[in-house]
Image (cartoon, rainbow, N blue to C red; front, side):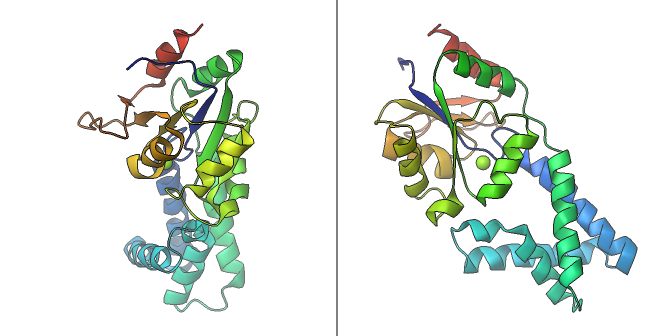
Length: 237
Ligand SMILES: [Mg+2]
């Protein structure tokens, strides 16, 4: 595949700039420990309720940013535990979760360097992400990437999660992007690369540590190290 210099490089956020999985698991563990230490609620019980609510909330609030809202998860878990009154505790659990989460965010190796390369080449940088706008802005701040990101579009502001075309179309408008002018980088074929290919005809890069991740119609490149992307971009220097 012959690459042209892109006008913009677009990214997913969670599990693309940093390990959401690690931050989430760590923060959730602290929430569980608080309930255990203060109220004797076992980690197994908490985990069970979390899994049930995760399924239920995603079913009810399908494809919306609210379906990922941790506050709703904690509120509903407290209800399942017959924990009343629960107003203060729901707020405390949510605050604890995010405090720990933000403290445990680290950009993947070479992400900073890659974003700096892009900036120097006068290429725009956009983030297209599922979830609440405020939280996603704060994540960018905690990752120390606020000076690199030109625009961030969230599923909250367009009313529907990726892979809907709406957040992609909004980003195209913000950057005056035409088809075939962008690269899209993400960890999900379904949510990031397939819609980017269909809507923007982007060159697509799948971030994956699984060696068996296959290229297909929606995936042009698979990479596990941002150094790979730096080398692709350096050709246009
Ligand atoms: Mg992701």
